[in-house]
Length: 206
Image (tube, rainbow, N blue to C red; front, side, top):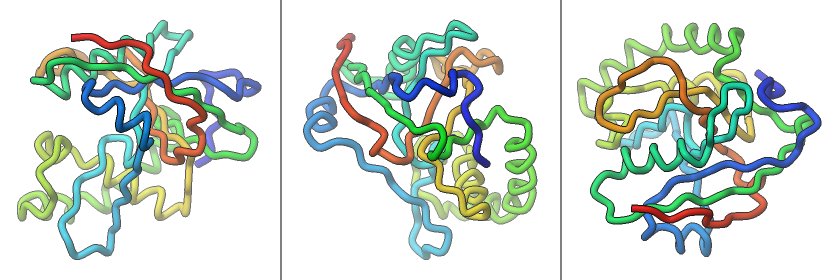
């Protein structure tokens, strides 16, 4: 499950992630930091479905190989997901990772895709039933009927894997319609907030 990130030189330890948020949330994030939820498989109470890359803090990364701009992806994402807000911001996160000792999961890796498909095959019948019974809280993943986050959490639990970050090339739509299946950005889910060394607002916009 350990994947040294292929889209970065292994010697690079520090880089930036871009987190889009409504402007009203910026001060809270700067002053109080981020909080990462957990998903408990043995919990009797209803829970929110994890987002598509699992639980964590979502950012976009620059990707020189494909020409993806992390900040622009973050802007597009927050304007689409947080519709109705009057203003938005992008927070630039300084990230530091020890690639030799900390685990990163790359969901575009063929071996990991095979593992996810095997876990999904086992979990899907129960997940379909839970969706039909409205067991989960009504969040964005529930409305989209997407259970990838739960499947990924199940895989990590099965493998006893504790990555600091999960990455995947994804497509971010500017509207409710998904007009392409080909990626236009590199998305990352930070699971260990200790890798965040600094937070700076780099842009506010409407």
